[in-house]
Image 1 (cartoon, rainbow, N blue to C red):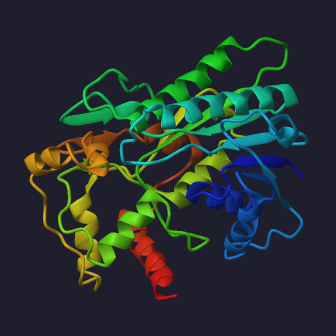
Image 2: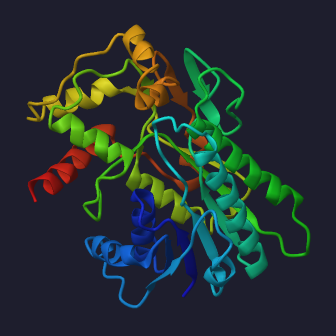
Length: 338
């Protein structure tokens, strides 16, 4: 049985990746910052599949060298999912950039040393869209201009981490070459396995449902379902055509935040507001609110993505957007009722 190290297994995407790996017959080693999170992850995964004896845990920190070499021992592949994620702008951008870049390089160096065949890295479409305005069309060759207008710390962290990964792969020496595949999702929604609503997307849905989002930004973007993200991560491990490529895993069409609210409203979520916030108001509020400042790169823009290469390579079709929205809401509602 082939073994896969999943970094950040306690996160929203990491949990789903682990469940998908177990369903596909892989053994999983999951990294957490503290082993106290292990029970929560196991219980969440059991909602999807009984891991039996095929799930183990280790402690890793993106900012520390300790444990990385040991974590890779016996692993055939790595899903490097762990990365700091916060929409709101931090006071010091290096709070996000440093762990993202250094953590990625720690994972790649240790994987190379251990003789791992391939690493699948979780990046983001924010590594492709930043520094542009209006209708932003992206494909696998698109990159964010880290010096561009409204490029936040989060955009920089994802862009610089992914670029550092490609540079590492390009400049590696030795006979056995580590392979790399990168997955670029948009904003990620979908059901939570563990009931943890800490992920930004889950927090947003929670606020929407209970009526704590009075106005929505005028922004259109392609969006992602966590189940699609997990499926492509796992499919990318052994697909020969995937090596050395970036894959956008999002809806085929862009949607507005307002569209999410309208779907919820028409399905009985009465407290949801569908009111649009004027762009000038959001831009003004960004001067005082770090969360609003983090949203600025999306406000007034439309992000379109070409997912044809992902669909062809993996024989994949995105989960319908309405299903993603309703499954997310149902999952959040279940947690709120507990």
